[in-house]
Image 1: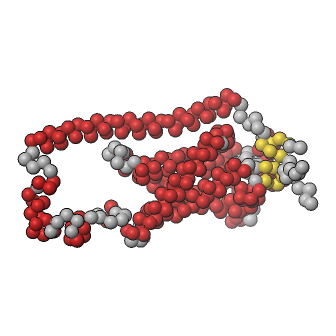
Image 2: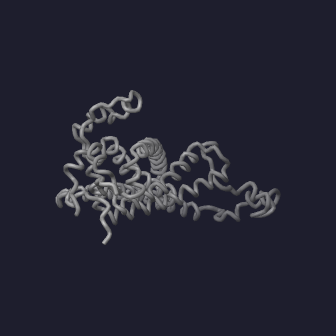
Image 3: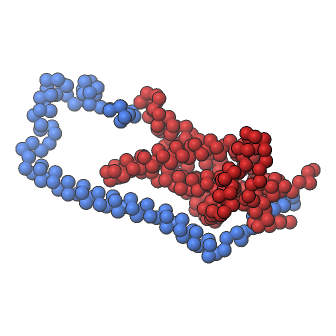
Length: 215
Length: 105
């Protein structure tokens, strides 16, 4: 048996929320792009719209359930995502050292990070703000277009499109880096745990300041 | 007893009570703001709709023809061209199907 020590990074509740988020957001992004570019006939686009709506409802239920059941996690996540320090600016100045690692095979010094690095914090802020706008505008456009005042429907449509594009493009980066950091990927999709040594290297502030040992 | 598969967890006291209430309150307030804005915009629009309804009722009272099936032009169109409502040609010309691509309209 391995003597490696592990940290519980993602609890079962967080993993369940993330599973449903993946299951709902990926089809939403794909059908959203189809509805934006309209490459098919009207009947086929109508079918894509129905798929978009079904997964939109699943995403809403998932988000609302987590907001209510895991409100403490939501508050903690918001605090982490929206707390900006000087280290975040330094992190963005070297882009977390990833371009140097990928393109030049060079390791550059990166400021110490907490549970989420600065890029993840920016993505988290986009998910919180963009996700909320997408849900509100999506419901407005689908279920209540008849009661939206003139101008508001158009505004909702523009906001939905802009946020959808930002989130979909961010998703590509998120998937790439998520799979690249394979221990994190396994933690989110399999067992919730991350090796202590890995975490100490990637997120030293989190390990030093926010963890407690369990017996 | 099952052995625990991890040795560390996040401290349950990451946030103080004051931080929790402050951040939680800000989140709830920010979510309530668009709800208030949308509600007031709808209420304002409804005032306009009500005034428009009043105007339409007034027009109806003053109109000679008050119902669509009493419209002579429509009756003539059905008699000479489309036969009757829901006829094959009416269906083809007056009914829309499926998704409407407004960009190509």
